[in-house]
Amino acid sequence: MKDERFDVAKTATELVAYCASQMRAIGGELAVVGISGGKDSSVTAALMAAAIGADKVHGLLMPDGHQADIDDAHALCAHLGIHEHLIPIGEITKAFLNELEAHEEVSRQTRLNLPPRVRMTMLYGFAQSLSKAMVINTSNLSEDWVGYATLYGDTAGAFSPLGMLTSEEVSQIGKHLGLPQFLTDKTPADGLTGQTDEAVLGFSYAVLNRYIRTGEIEDQEAKERIDRMHRQSRFKFLPLPLFNPRLSIRADDTANVYGRGDK
Image (cartoon, rainbow, N blue to C red; front, side, top):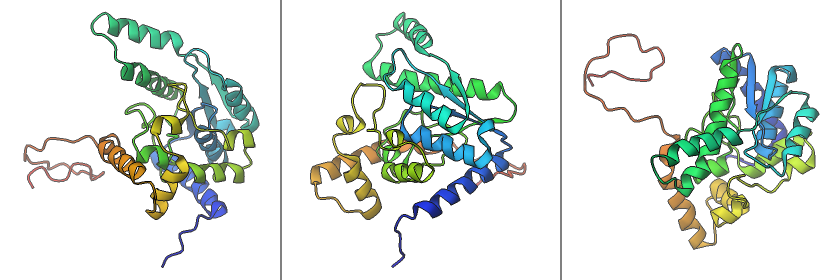
């Protein structure tokens, strides 16, 4: 059987090389990362700093009103020596909600998902105002596995360094990269509901991560909940479905995106 034990040093080295390679492949010279003060954005920023240089990484801090751990985000930028940009989004979010409320009663889910989408819009607006800057995704495998992400919000980015690593593995990578413990060991919280991730999800990351990596789980109720969330959220991570009218595409599809329309 293949030895699948997590080698943090080897993975960290491969991650840095991967980030550098991806930037070259897409023509990126600068990285733009949304900095929340949590472990995922901290590790992503650290990887990009190691891959292309701290002077080429821009961290955007985008509080929606009061953010209790904003000091951690400031500390991360100072620790890495990356460019820091504080861009509050509270008034922007309010403006969106005011316009929506003039037409429809705004749902709770809309209120929760709007800030991540505003942040991603700001990240892309900032990146496109620079030359050859790319927005880097900060999501990890654990939250993505159960769809704990906002479509076109924190699911977006040019590429995802942490998308195949569990929350525990991300924490280990952060420690290996020398990030402060208050960042790598921080209790995950979504910043939307005022609750921890685990309180919202209804199971612990320890249970989820073990299930992902080994397939083993004792709590049948948790298994059913995880499986259901995974199944129902897959649309968030699939390419946009395209209706195929069975018409010919004769141009060279060098990116191999469309296939042949007449198949």
